Image 1 (cartoon, rainbow, N blue to C red):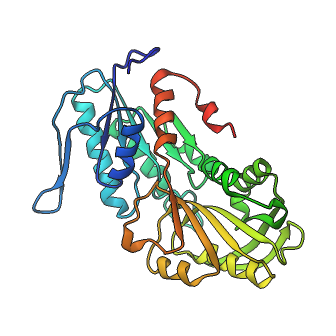
Image 2 (image 1 turned 180 degrees about the vertical axis):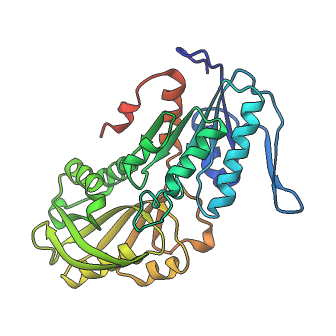
Length: 323
C-alpha cells in the first residue's frame, strides 16, 4: 500500500500487549501483517522492547489502548514510540482505541491534577506525530494534545447494529444515562428515528450516582429502552439508571457501551441487573472469565482499519461518520 500524498512510505502496524486481538483484526482488514516486535519485562519489572525489522522511512502505527493496567500499557506505548522514533520511522501514529486518564480532565477540587493533559503531553513528548482514538470521555480532550487527533465515534457501530436487528420501533425509547452522553445518544436516536429521554442524576462521590428523574421520551411504561454510554467501569452509574427506568415500568432494557472497562465486581453487577443485553465494542480486551453472560462484543477492527487507510492516503475521515 503506497501513500498517495505524503510520501511516508508503506504502512507498518505494531502492537504492544494491551489488545493484540484487535491489532490482529485491524491488520487483517488492511491485508497486512503486524510488525515484528517483542514487548516483555526485565526481571525487575521494567519494560523491555525490541523492534526486529526496519522501519526507516515508513508510516508506522502503534495499536495500544491505555486500558487497565493503565500505567503498564501507557509505558509500553511510550517506549515503543521512542523505539520507532530512534529507528527513523517517517511518521508515528498512536492508535489508542481507549484513552485512559480521560476522566481526570479538570480540577474538580483545589490542588487536583489534570492527569489527562499530563498524559497527552507525555505521548506527544515521546515522539508521536498524531493520535487516533475513539469516544474520548470528553471530545474537548482533543485540544489537550499538541499533535493532530482523529476522533472516531463508536455510536455508528451501534447504529449499524440496530438498523439490522431492531424491529417494532414504536416500542423503543433511547435513553441517555446522563447529560454528558446526550450528544451521542441524540445521534443514535435521530439515525434510528426513535424518541429520546435523559436521566437526570447527581454524583455525591466517585463511581456513585443517584438518579433524580427522567426528562422527555414520553411514557417509559411498557417501552423497551436502549441506553448508550461511552464506558462501563464499575457499572454503578449505568446500572442505577437501569434500575430507575425499570421502576418506571420499562419492559426490556438494553445498553450499548463503547469501552467495557468492567472493574471490580462489574461482571456480577451486570448479570444481576435488569439488563437484557449489554453490547460493547472491543476497544478494550475483556478476557472470557470477566465477560457477563448477557454481553455481546462488536469489533471495531474494520472501522479503525478504514481510518488508518484514510490517514495514510491523506483523505478525510468524514466518510466514516456517514450513517
